[in-house]
Image (cartoon, rainbow, N blue to C red; front, top):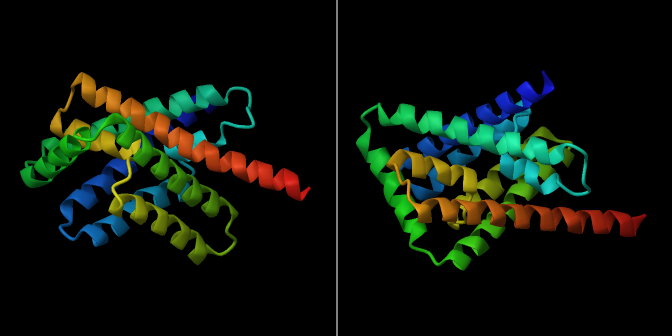
Length: 208
């Protein structure tokens, strides 16, 4: 039952990131769209859903079974995003679909190491958002510390692997390069998030 809950929570996280991405693509004003994008992560954190970029930073210190949780989280996120993208393609709102497709093609125009660096920055911001939400005692502060990192990664065009899956699925961008770049983004997000977590662990141990 616990494994089924993990998978379902991961699917729902994918659903909400997909919805947040559609909101962003539907708004012409870039900064306003970036702020509304944070809706997805706020819902995920408040409901305890499982998002890859929110979970991968806590892989160390290693806990038995955590890699399995990450695998279920990632696969569930993909399914949730895929369902949202495919359903939206049936809506007939072509300008949003075209905008998402164009955005992903632009991302594929980067050199692979540029994508990796931008993904690392995104992973760092996601760790900041998730860990700050966990540690903040005041609800208003929790919201601010989630909204701002999400808005920053969107405005700065950092690469969030799960969000970018929406643009891939919207545009049917099923190419080898597209999947390789997604893999680079997944790795980069992990590097950024895990790096900050390791620094936090080092600082905590030093304080002791």
